[in-house]
Image 1 (tube, rainbow, N blue to C red):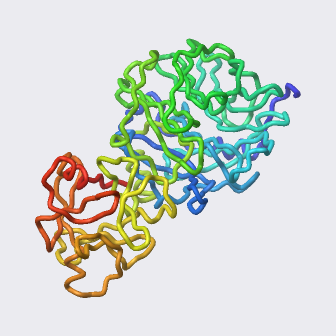
Image 2 (image 1 turned 90 degrees about the horizontal axis):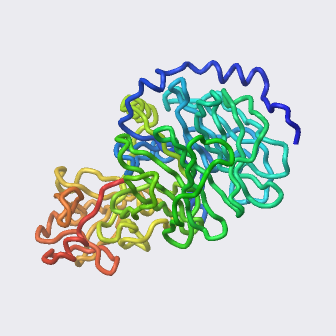
Length: 455
């Protein structure tokens, strides 16, 4: 490996510099969050190796923008991306980095990453590929942070040093010209998917241990290469973890650690919460508390201002559909399957089976009817108390069967329940995972009849 600086053309540097700076970072008052991600589903029907964007007010429940379609697509290299990362730059704008890899073939060597700039999340500009090294290895899962001691950004990524998988680092002032790579973190075993959070001048590195499939957090007072000490025991939900993501809430009093299931067939986000980032006390966050974007994989989250959230929503648009999340089985969502309504675990195939347009009630505009997104013109309706997905035949009976009235959740008033329009003593609920309408008289039934209207 040579020690020369790796750089793009002067034209690309000029393009990057042409981005109009936003307000200085110190002037930002963050009140919301942005997430970037790519998409995969078990049977690959919803795969998208491009940049996706979501927003959240609470950092836990997410609205995918642009109808969960890409907001930017790589046009060079492999033509696809994985593992996107977003950070606020010192000029107040944003940088987006991503692995240059399309699909699920992981034996490719690639010395480049994708990079975009964004002033305010309404456009992603200055697209370029930046070379990080000249080694016969990959450049996966780039993350970055500002290092004031160097007056530069540190770009940390996964690579193989010929002995094992480690983290490397390059330093840059513009995400165009990169320093020579250095070894950043090598604990003596294979690691993957590093994510660095700087909080109160202390540096925290979340990573995956490839030997045990668990997530860990290490700490450094300087953020310098080879300065981290692991401070947590292994964290895992499900069969194994990857893609750790450390987030400080906008209040600065709560911290979240997100992680993906490592299997595309079980592409689920899990989360932990702590009030002590420097400690070893992370509690599992109940899936009732959060909802990730549909089919999202290996995300990154950055706090943003209310104006940036509003601008992104205005530019890209909120979803024109919803999902219904079960209260007592929060890993399951209302979907149709073989013409019947039921709740099934996410992820599911095809993912669009769980998407609904909540339209004015067919029999009463004050109510609501659930129209299938992937079978437009078909609605959830009850017949002999069982709930089906049927085509609207235009009859009065169908309109009444397909109309429900939304009320405060019977098990939790912050959620929702749905009373039948024409059998008003019965509510939409699941029983053995199948949807039906029933009278509600027990705590179990109230939980069965409670849903979160989400995205």
